[in-house]
Length: 149
Image 1 (cartoon, rainbow, N blue to C red):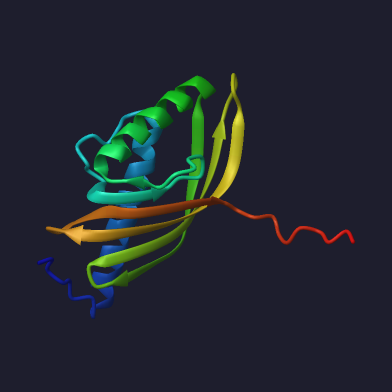
Image 2 (tube, one colour):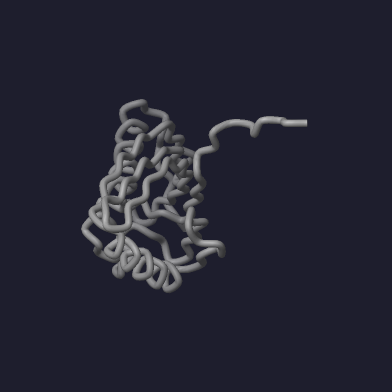
């Protein structure tokens, strides 16, 4: 059974939100160093991922590790990577947290590409440590397509 955190105190809520944000930022920062999370430092065993570039749902820590290796390989082939994570909203629901944030990424040549992605991540607290249990990514839409007829 997962212990519930008393979030009735505003300072406790703020501290938990900062802890959630720290995990999210550390997870992205690890990617820029091209290091895999083989020790599952940031993700729970049953993690699921809808990645912006992958057509299939990634299920479980082993699939996540394989995905990370593929993603790092393509990243290295592209060029230097920079990105900016903008947290829009983090809400707490007991020992579950939901973050909604944007990621602006930019790969430099030789295989340059950039994008603006919106991400929802669900984290759960296990033994006082926040871990990602689901990630959903999607390219930020530019609006409703024009109606031409």
